[in-house]
Image (cartoon, rainbow, N blue to C red; front, side):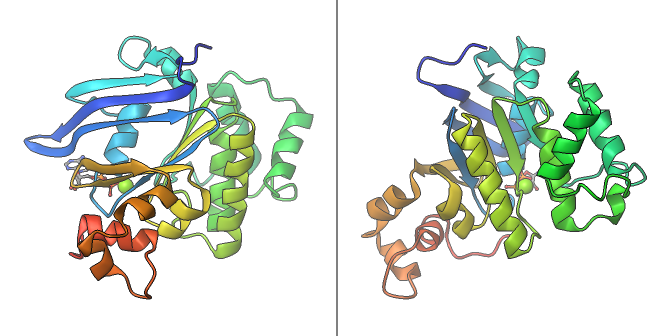
Length: 260
Ligand SMILES: Nc1ncnc2c1ncn2[C@@H]1O[C@H](COP(=O)(O)OP(=O)(O)O)[C@@H](O)[C@H]1O
Ligand SMILES: [Mg+2]
């Protein structure tokens, strides 16, 4: 599988997305490298899901280029899609299927051979070894989340896309998911996740892009973002405890106004 020369597994370049006349994503560019966890951080309505949907090939940007694992999403969409694993923001598998059936279904869709042993391994890995015949709809939020992550990675994709993966999870489940992401990073996967949690961005992201009103306003490591903006008066004004946090930078750059 071709990697870009700079080691990037995803290149997003000058992407514009409109819904009718409304521009949701405005000239967005960023790269995600293999072995990197990259966070798209922004308030509600910033354009995070729209950007991810364009990478996933679910919506067509009006302009710009998206290249996944060296494959242009317009010209080589099958190869590009085969290189990525996707976990959507709202999980809506058929709630009547049981866990084993859903895993088998996805293995079939991705053309992955699934022996009984491999299925057992997956179930053990997501700590659902005793729940294979439980219906998806009966699982807890954390359990559903673990199933959907297993499905998104069943074909060992180079790029993993996670839309607000920890929203609604309890602290234990959230920690566990962070650890899973980190172990995938060690294996060389590139991970692009969206979040509005500063804690999450600081805890797991190697680099983040802050996006607001469809525009990327900063890209850097969490620590560099703090260092670069610590003297910005708006950031200082947002600070609450005498030291500058990533959240202060975020509020300083995106404003205090609450988004719907
Ligand atoms: N299908 C759609 N039709 C019209 N507007 C949309 C649609 N999807 C999203 N939007 C609008 O585009 C903007 C960005 O939405 P979205 O990408 O979902 O943001 P985020 O994921 O950051 O919360 C929002 O103003 C949202 O209301
Ligand atoms: Mg969203």
